[in-house]
Length: 283
Image (cartoon, rainbow, N blue to C red; front, side, top):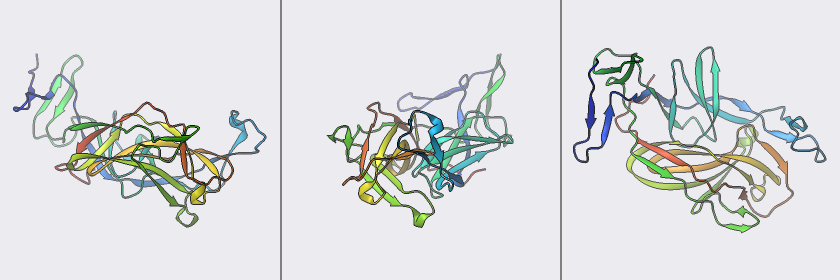
């Protein structure tokens, strides 16, 4: 029968790890890389049924920048971000998995954790469980250590018919423009939640969808689908709603404001880690 090792923190007896339980370790860290542009979808005619997918067409010139980080070996990876980004899927090519994000940039840092493995340096402590025989802990890998779980603030105040100035109470909007026509118009609604601990990285537990309009920013009276994300910064966590990847857009006429609507009341959380002591970059 294999030995078992359980470690507790001295001051409060909090469990640090139990070799009967599989731990997550840092697999890769680095800046997100540009993956490609995705198209938005428009209704072929205002008279067509928007509930019929065949009535929507893709832009001929995709301009929604998608970013990602790739893993050649993976099991169940989880990405923690420093900076903006909203997860929008995964891409698998020749066994290489790329975690994809929208509303991000090449300045966004990613720390990707996965189930600890027997790969890498042979020095250090490795623990296994039987039935089935598998590695549960490898001291050569930096372990995942969640220091906080932060709930997103509630939606912003309604001023008319489920329409809000900001997606979050206490939040603010960013109308970024279209980078000289190289990208679609970018809209974000953000809120910053202070958390003590230096530079932090965050991973959102689930994402919500919503709708936004940027008429007052000169975005042509169009309503876009949006999605949510979260990332850390020095001293806190930022939740964002950003224009969704491959979103639909519909004409809603002129509007004197930038607005957000259909924001779900169910609130996600962001899991938070400190980045100090974690290697960056790491392949």
